[in-house]
Amino acid sequence: MELPWAEPYKIKMTEEIRLSSREERNKWIEEADYNLFNLDSDKVFIDLLTDSGTGAMSDKQWAEMMIGDESYAGSRSFRKLKTVVENVLGFPYTLPTHQGRAAENVLFTVLVKEGMLVPGNSHFDTTKGHIEFRKAQAIDCTIDEAFDINDMHPFKGNIDLNKLEQVYKNHPKEQIPFCLITITCNSSGGQPVSIANIKAVKELSDQYGIPVYFDAARFAENAYFIKEREEGYKDKSIKEIVKEMFSYGEGFTMSAKKDGLVNIGGILALRNEDLYRSCGNFGIIYEGYLTYGGLAGRDLGALAQGLLESTEYDYLKSRINQVEYLGEKLIAFGIPVQKPIGGHAVFIDALNFLPKVPRAEYPAQSLGIELYLEAGIRGVEIGTLLADRDPETRLDRFPKLELLRLAIPRRTYTFKHMDYIAVALKNIYERRDEITSGYQIVWEADILRHFTVKLRRA
Ligand SMILES: *Cc1c(COP(=O)(O)O)cnc(C)c1O
Image (cartoon, rainbow, N blue to C red; front, side):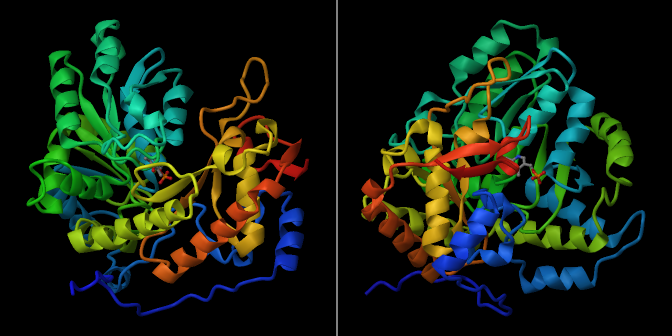
């Protein structure tokens, strides 16, 4: 018999989580105005709100916390990080930042000006925010297959080269500061980008004299999918694939709260010394001196170690297998989910799950609340509440899909937890016909309403 696969780590420390009763949860969610963001975390049993900064560090990372060098300039911990970024990721210049969005802020302050266009594959919301804040425009050139949840394309994060070339052809190169490739593509469901596509984007961009940058929060998960799915990469190590991927870019911004395996941090990595100097000036104003950028020395050390661990095949296999395991369980129960299963999360198709809940009553939010009431599990709505109102008409904007995202924190929950989540959803799915109404808005903010919206039962 073939030996089953098992996690490449054992657990040295635990954190208690408490299962509440349905009566308690009924009261708590009402007190939270039916907004899952308003719940205290200790009222949640399994927290799948996000995979950002919610993972577990290893003993070696905790050891780095103890030996962190807190010198203002030239800290040993910074040198460790710089060495890993140089040797493993392939960029000579490293600017630490307090988060991913801070790295975006520093880079975009230098490169993005009013009226510019930044093409890419479904930009992350903070990325889009930083572009639009500068009165520039993010242009989504993702392949059409990404928007069909049943299309089994292995690289649904890919950029459509025709869409990209249209942008390049129709605008002067001075108007396009760079093309941004997000790996993996969160907005299309944690879907990877192939090396072939990255290479083709690089070649096309070269023809037009436009540099390529990466939004690299989940770069290691992207490399794993390349190894598993792309021809010619089966026998390459993750670190070799990572090196090749990044060789096609001038730099990256990274939220280290994902594949950096730390709870806070970010990186701006660059190839060009002049650009590094320009960015460094803004890094100092916004973040801190060049060798710490808003982080403690110990954070830099833990991040350096985290990058070494997240680019190990065994770690990635256990990580992605766990997400896939949950997705496959749901599929086996007949529950409609986005396919193929993404790297960091399972996305449930709420329009098909709860067809009787009217679109105007927020089906994905309704499903999120049902899941909390059923089992104390917290997911997040990626649907109409998130899409917000049209700025002109102030009417709800209905996106193509109404999704409930279950993001799995790294090295945090066990396979038993996955079984628990799957059964909770199965129970709701079996009584889906009884769920015929959703929620109405009582109060909402002018922007980013999903964080603070107050709801009541419709
Ligand atoms: C999380 C994330 C960001 C923003 O990073 P923060 O650390 O949350 O500021 C940017 N891009 C992508 C793809 C992300 O996943």
